[in-house]
Length: 272
Ligand code: ACO
Figure 1: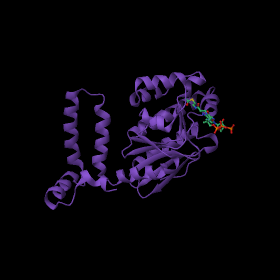
Figure 2: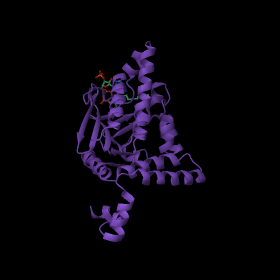
Figure 3: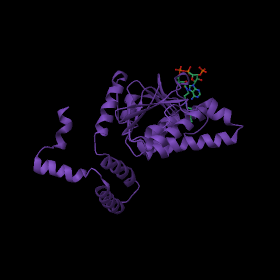
Figure 4: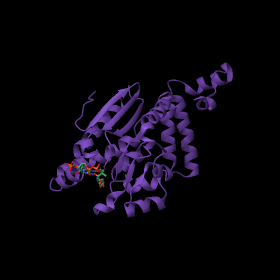
């Protein structure tokens, strides 16, 4: 499996795979090459047995400054073929590949996060930001709209009021505000960000992978359903999980709790 790319770094550590945007001198703006690299890496990592949890983040002071205004927009203006290919790769990895990634995904927002970079934040299951991070739906300041699917992403996770306020004004906000308006789950001081993100990654890594995958698919999918559809779908999903789970997690859990009395999952997190 290829682990060396021009614009990103892939680091594996004990089941947790870090994918790091690596153009710090350009604040990790997303060039066509970065889109090709991310598209390839996520495709490879989806089937990689060593990857139990995926974290995406940025090198240096930025998560990502959004689309690269020079190489993604200006330099492809007269190159429709490159524009088309980079747009396809951009849309595929930031939404399809990430939102359907078969293992848990975490966005760790360490610094600047602008424009197009909101999509990968929203695509990840969990997002944790530094208090000091700076977010901005800055498109309006460039005479464009939050395109790709950014407008859709932000109205899915934020309230309509917050989404339209920040999209229309282009005003920046910090990690604490991002947590308050639910763009991210929560924020911590930058010095604690890596430790906190790893804590959540390790928690997820140690759970039954089949149950975890079915859970995220279930929670994502029911959002567009009626009550009756959700009830039917979830019953079928549970049957599928129990049939497919190699670890037989449900039977094991019941026996540990009811017979051996060795397992009290409801209280585990209180012990830390
Ligand atoms: N596209 C292309 N290059 C960029 C981008 C970008 N989105 N963001 C930063 N860069 C480049 C700068 O041009 C500069 O390059 P240079 O050294 O060759 O001159 C380098 O990265 C460093 O940028 P500075 O502005 O000097 O860094 P600073 O730390 O002062 O500011 C910040 C960082 C706030 C991110 C600033 O660069 C900025 O506002 N960037 C634009 C962010 C933005 O609005 N992105 C949305 C684009 S629209 C969309 O995504 C659809």
